[in-house]
Amino acid sequence: MTAVPDSISARLARLAEEPHSTAVVRCSGPVSAEGVTAAQLLDGCRRIADALRAAGVRSGDRAVVMTRDAYQLVACSYALTSLGAVPVLIEPRAEVRRCLDEVAPGVFIGEPLAHVARRALGWGRGHVRTALVTGRGFPGQAHLLGRHLPSAAPDGTGPAPRVPEPRPEDLATIAFTSGSTGRPLGVEYAHATLAGQLTALDAVLRTRADDVLLSCFLPFAALGPLLGVTTVAPQVDHLAPARTPPGHLVGPLLQHGATVLLGSPAVLGLIAGHCARRGLTLPSVRRVLSFGTPLRPRLAEALTKALPAGAEILSVHGATECLPVAAIDAEQSRVLRVQPPPGHSGTCLGRPLPGVEARVLDADATGLGEIAVAGPVVSPGYHARPEATAAVRTRADGTLWHRTGDLGRVDEAGRLWYLGRKAHLVTGEDFTLTTEDVEATADTAAGVRRTALVGVGPAGRQRAVLCVEPERAARRDAVVSALRTALRDHPHARRIGTVLFHPRFPTDLRHHSRIDRVRLAARAAEGKPW
View 1 (cartoon, rainbow, N blue to C red):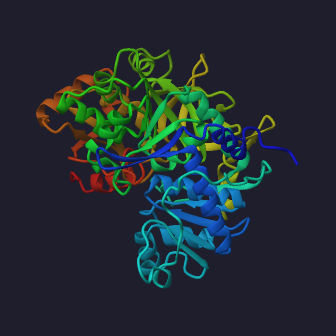
View 2 (cartoon, one colour):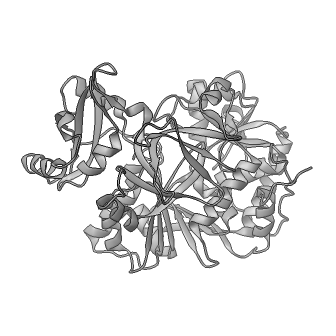
View 3 (cartoon, rainbow, N blue to C red):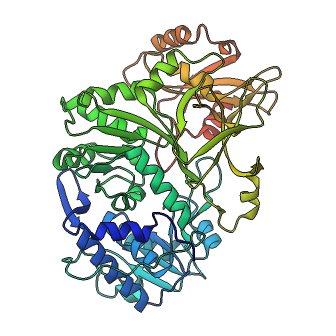
């Protein structure tokens, strides 16, 4: 059997070599937290694996894991992996019932609230045969919701779980897309995929032995211990990340001296705003990783004010199907935005990470085309959706490429330039506009928080509408004047027929950072603000 290079089992074995190191810190509120050592985590994984085996969970079983507790998510995911079962991660706000019908999971693991929703809304009905509950138990729970799993971190005196070495092609997990650009799809990760993603993340994080990672995205907390870094999981409002009390983020960061901060622009904006209002700084942070959507210069500038000199801010690009792909330093991105190479516009994403290949397919005369990715970070495909998989796969020059749906170019230095989503092109009778080309310039206007270019009308005869979300205290007439100035020399500014103001853009469920342009376009068609 061919071994998986740097597999989960190999990384868990390395974790066991540092039994007294803190693996996960589960937070509750701005200061309360519980540290879990590597020995405790591995002991807990084994105990949960024993309970899963006793409940009838077997190799190959697909098991939904739905809990907001970082330790329980990590321990249950590792325990399932040790049994050869397949964890399934899904947004609790997505089309859960349809997604579960597609996956047909035999096992459902979750906190009591998730099981209440499962029973009330019919999640997994006809498929789930084993229901297991995390968190505190209560009388009658086994009859009402399911058998209780050991949820408290043990003392760590027990042995680690035995994790067999997987085959590269074995299915490791299924993670659903958020559905922000269409129906949620179950993305399959083989063990080789996860190993490739972890290796690429090593290159981005560049962690040291004493690093502490504050992960503001719960699923990433499951990867932190495998990356060999103490992972602090703050109490983020996972149903609405942008509404998380900022003290729940900054408090744990300061308390545990986080050196690496990871989050979406929406969450990083909460941290930057809180620090500005309270006059706080983040002296321990040396690297910030922003993901979910390209980082805008204004947010990078606000973060810089709270960080020590020399701290690095990286904008990381990728998707559920291929993560991560590329990364760029925020300062370099700002300079390139002001002085792009000839023939380039939009937002520079940086060079592909080691082991990742990227190219542009179906390019026009200007080099604009669809960004495609190849390499070990790319998912084998979508679960039970062969037609969807076939639609995003292309073979060129002997390599199988994943079409990302992103439009872009590659410059002479090998850097990727992002011009927006292919599905969001605005096409008029005599023009075609990419969203990022216009928005990257419009977003620099004073008083503008962000903008969104949408097309109103049928493709080929659309009217270009620029939607504007202003800063809270900005005057509308001043913002309009600033927009005129910012777009004065833009070659496509004259194509913008209407400007509409919206107090708050609708965004995706997962990161609260990607703009829901379909809803914006529907409102723009009515000529109304949100």
